[in-house]
Amino acid sequence: MSLPSHGANPHYFVQAMGLQLPEHAIDFSENVNPLGVPRVVRDRWNQYIEAITTYPDPHASQLREKLANDLNVSIDQLIVGNGAAELILLIANYFRKKRVLIVEPTFSEYRDACLTYDCEIIRYQLLQESSWDIQVESLLEAINGVDILFLCHPNNPTGTTIERSTLIQVFSRAREKNVTVIIDEAFYDFCTENVSVIPYIEEFHNLVVLRSLTKMYAIPSLRLGYVVARKEFVSELKKFQQPWSVNGMAQQVGLDCISDEEHAIDTKTFIREERKRMFKLLSDIGYEVSPSVVNFYLLKPKGTNEDLTPLITFLIRNGVIPRHTYNFLGLEGKYIRLAIKTRQDNDLLLSVLERWSQRP
Image 1 (cartoon, helix red, strand yellow):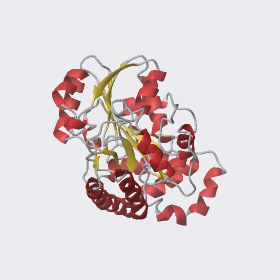
Image 2 (image 1 turned 180 degrees about the vertical axis):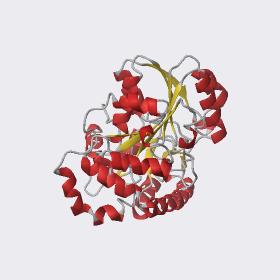
Image 3 (image 1 turned 120 degrees about the vertical axis):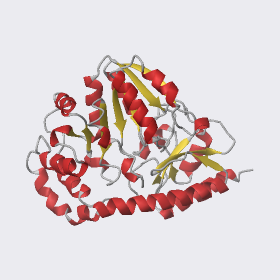
Image 4 (image 1 turned 45 degrees about the vertical axis):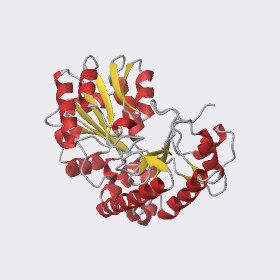
């Protein structure tokens, strides 16, 4: 059975499972904002037509300038890409044939991109028994002898974060060992607490921060992400990027999205409250979840450590599409990942999961 490597596009997943996609199925494998796109995008939609009739700005200058001002960095410390996936490939290309340490389970694209460019992969495994947190001494030891460290923060698929003091220790050791640290903050803006490490880029020139604009603003089809790093590193990455990588509509929509601060605030509040409600109710009906602080979480029935294909099949047949975990190293299908959706959708999920837990 060959399953898709990512969430979303549920018809491919359901087909690979040998099932039929139910009418009106809800895709819980997709980690985008359940509140949808900002109102400003809906209001200005007709104005974006001009952006597709001319060649886009190859430097995404307006978007980069706005991001630079918001983040208090210089514009030459920013590169905008055709989604975070393109930027991960650029980074892997830059570090081709190097030794890469990946903290797992995590987003599979790091491993796939690095293998494309003949890198040697070393694993650092997170465990549920440690609340999916790193054990700092062992990670500091693992840094020795590698060239690059990938660390997703908040982590996908667990939704967990790392203590700032621990991150500083990791950055310091990596700097001593001349290791570049890639921090993927694709889901940072769903956190009510500030977990970003961008303010540390000046202190740690070995630090590279990767972000996505598609999750918070529910624009995954437009493909939009960016990297913040020292200007010398950004300049090198640009050499690998194809011309007009980011289309004009994505640039304009992205600019409007990041100007809508109210949408992000409302989203954070909703996600926090709905996550708190869901976690309690899921526990009550017999499930354990990862201690996520964002808009998704890992789930499995309490007291089990079994392959969850039967549960996945049951969910699909009842109109709920979960994210499988067979390609998250260290999980191997013993968990599923689920997104925080609207309250109505979440209630449907609870109902289906309760029926599963009450089987004879």
